[in-house]
Length: 157
Image (cartoon, rainbow, N blue to C red; front, side, top):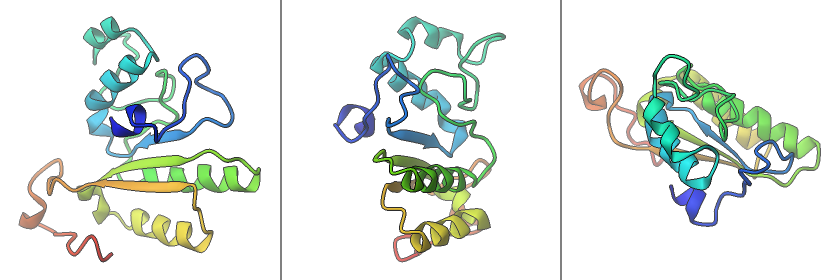
């Protein structure tokens, strides 16, 4: 919420596809239910539409999908959000764009090798317009991380 209302994120709901807008990728797709009220409050779609969540024909599915106003990419493949963010950030850099790319990952998806490959790629290509945010709630879809594979020490990594 701080990105959208704290002055960190530049986007205009009236021009959701503006070329120089900032991008947000919800890599932890199961958190779409938390993203939709933020998008509605920013004016991407009416607040009343929140009542259609996961209903047949709704634009608000269980995972955020491209085509939902304010959503740039389909999320759902665990660990691929940072890869998508790298591609978008590199494309922007090569085209001389000044937009920011923000990716919200879950600490549980940090088990995926693609996350670490993307982090190495971002560093190598000096993608300074890319920001990865990790939700460190110590949970994954099936259990507490400490019960099967800890990602600690995450800060050092």
